[in-house]
Length: 561
Image (cartoon, rainbow, N blue to C red; front, side):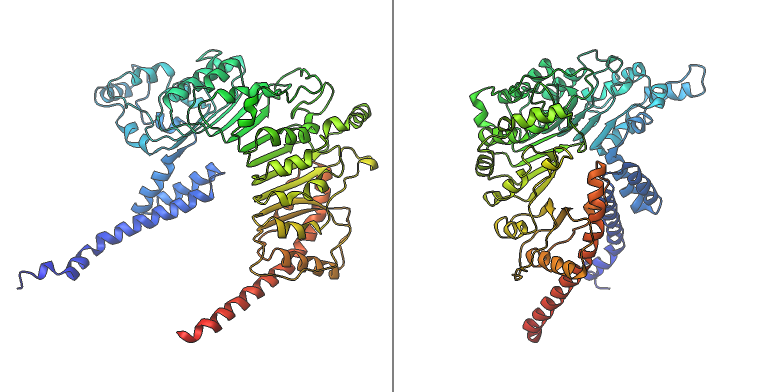
């Protein structure tokens, strides 16, 4: 026998093949589980159900599935079941519990907790029975406890401070990146930490989670909270709840922070029983020259039409939005994403309020709002004005005509609603012709949602120029056309859109979603049929082009093979 034969690399490879095959199965299982996880990020229950089904298939899927299950935990209960449970001294289990405490009560917990990167603290009726707070504190004070309960945790949602939940935020990893804190403004929710519960949490994260970059606080901002927030050094995205009436001074503490917040979301405190009203013109009071150095790159403001930026001593602050745009163009020129959405598009105002607003139109519509907004905020990549009533019925037309000055726009949503149902407030909307301008001036645009006057169809079809504009989604809310157009018009419309945007992927799905009010729902129902028909015409155009392109490539390069 050749003594060197065992060193033959081919023989060695064949000997290693079974082991390598097992490893491949494990890797494949991990990839499949990871793919499944990505598909169920918004449905945690369905995600866990599917992972549990996979875990019983075989050894490889068991390891991959359990790893994924422990990665994101919707409650603290699974971890508490890994610890010795409190039981009656006369119980048969008491001896087992005693033995576990003498050995290492944290051994199972210590094995699984490093796998977890995301956890949600919620009320759990069984948790208080199986793991009372005093028992957990007893276990926590044992020398065998882990230094950090969740050493790899990066995302924490604090939805409850009852029982053991109140301890966990103070025992997590220093590597936390994202924290969301629910509203604990009711007295019964402060049972563990007292009235300074949220402030205590925020202070804890400021000093014990130095790399925290995203923070959402649903409780209204207080002076103590603002002072504590100034201690954060790595915060990039923040979501705060502001009291009404809103005044910019409520967020002036941002100037004193040691970090550079790029994304700011503001939500009104709608739990307030009685609303006080701000004086006319004070809703956007300048709070300092440092405004010009604002680092905000994304601003989102949401809420009921009666509480978004209370602008006057009388009614609806949603009409302050043109003023807000004007102010931002002078104080936050680095802003990149801007979104406003009204949750009650059909809210109607008393006649006295309507008259009051109309008489003060110049106050609510700065003279140079369009010019300054489009010129100074040229870095905008996202602009969304959703279900906003504008005192100027032609606001959208004026804005769209200047969008060529915003060449970096990638997402645009312009869905205005009428001020009232009165004919004099009928919206003046852009026509389909505006798409021709957008296709030539806003080349970075990828997602467009817009209300258009569909009473006329374009007669001049542009010549297609490949590769063409890269717009992917186009959702047109069709106004002033409630009858299905003839086939000839549908063909012209499909050809028009296809030539302007040859890479369209979706023009109809938006209208299958639940709409916020009856008036928008009515327009949306008409849109479903219209854009479904147009989509059926555009798809063959695209398929034919792909076939022709494939044939050209084959003819050019096929002969060289």
